[in-house]
Image (cartoon, rainbow, N blue to C red):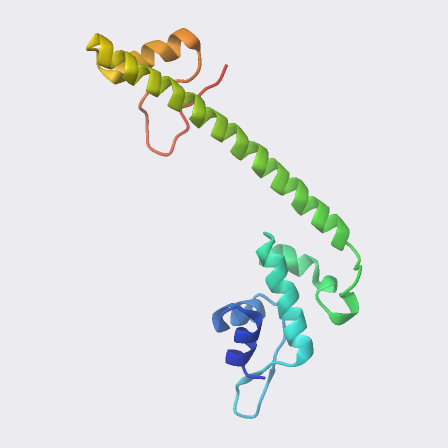
Length: 155
């Protein structure tokens, strides 16, 4: 099967297939005309790689799990469970970090909304009210620093 057909059957691009090959995850036979020729085994391997990428593995991580890519490693493979558990722990850490950031954003939003409400009734600039509330309630630092920096601090 040629690259275009292989990519279509896998639901990925030809470029992605070449990337798998360039990263050393696959070795694809070439026809006499130089075109890549994908066997059924190649397609199964590419599907496994695609699935690992889809759940967050980098090509470097997948390369370390090479034994899990072949047909012989289609079932349990050495190190596969450990690598999946490591990935799961990594995802859990990312999720916890995102949950903390979400909470900080919600707290800042609450402070700013309260500040806007008070500013309307007191004819005071909203930022001044929000800063005053933040310092009083210890919810968030509403200072305006460099873009991309996290200025939110929680007590």
